[in-house]
Figure 1: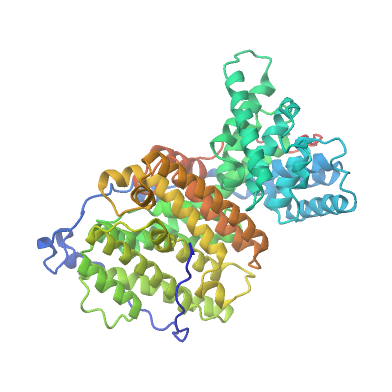
Figure 2 (figure 1 turned 180 degrees about the horizontal axis):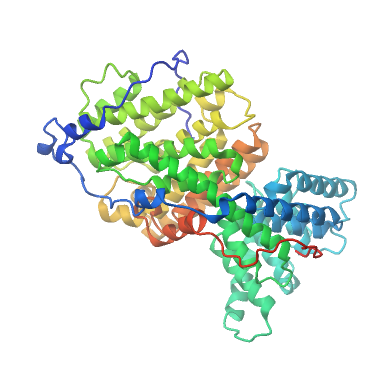
Length: 605
């Protein structure tokens, strides 16, 4: 079996007293000249100054300010939102409603109109159940594929039969479909909502991707001014082939699509203005949260005193915006950004600084979870353990006070599982052992840290019904999200880690086990990633977990594709990630039109 659940542990542990990290004065004594006090200068360590410092200066982060945080912009947004709401309610045609939902989602505005969107989808779905020919009497590929994608996305049951209707008796897609460029693009995007054994969607992806690539090769060199719509289509196709919509995070897509939508012949000015204004207002919220997270990180002192580790507070916060962008989830973003920071530091303790003997002691300390029994730890590990211990206890006490749940055993267990998996990798590295691929994956879906992130998310998600088995054994939703993150990470960090001689990862395991070439191994990882997404789609559809938690789990996978698309964006801080952080959190979208009153245009999408 590919995925093995961890063993059960006792749930009798109760959050207790907080233990303080040593004062900054004591820290200075402990870390004089960045050397711990237990003669570590005589210890040969793997790396000490391996990672570059953060490119985000603390004072710069604290100085962030935006004009869009004023009440005047909130009032303008409210006005525009009601104008759009009126227009939404006037759209009656089913295809027009589907197009509108798609545009609202891609512009990042759907969360304002959840009730309206649900009503439209319910009505269309109910009509389809009564008479399946209503939406397909003209065999409209574009409308059928769009409907399939939106229904799958929102959890409605819809069969692939609607797609099979475009195949001939031999099971091949009709060649005349290639005359419908928008339909082919729509079918391509829909194919990524497939589940296991839905071969028709695999065939649809192959059929459409080949056509779309050919379309681009024929039209990309057209410089004429009278092909505006073709240029817009080419823009959308290039974007989709780079990464499908289903695999993109909402904020990233909104920032890109706002700029692309301006070039659409059906652009609606009111929608566009609302999208820009809403994006900029949410950005002011993110900036305040980032300031608070940076202050927390600076106050606990680990970034400064454990200088061998990655100081990546901005990137750690950026992950949370990708998973939960709506303003009402500020607490989740704040807590998970701290979780991410602690994960990054502890990962570096195991990967780049701790000796094997120290790592054995630290793993045992995490398992005991006793701040009074850590005298054998070197001082830098004591600081790290106490910071983690305090964080978990504080969070558990807050949740107990608010909801009456004792979540300490589950939070503690997730960190214990993580550190045990890190130690297994350290043993492999120490001995020069190359595990079999299956053996590697059984450990690596935990060592990628997604279970820790999602367990903490689980206890924070409002209205999540609490089930012990989801956390003690990790639900399949958590496992598949973890696998997506692991495979994306291994693929994206491979080049860097190959140069640095890092711990063996999945690609080397495949090459060693099956004598595959490096290229073949990379392709197999991409194939496994696609298969795991299918399983994730199916589990997200069937699981009794809350819709919000399942979306968080999927978004964690999407953020992995964002962070590791061009290499190791979390560690290296390359320009693509820097630019995405700037555009999503720091730089507002420019809009020179401030007179929002009187916008009563008929809606076009």
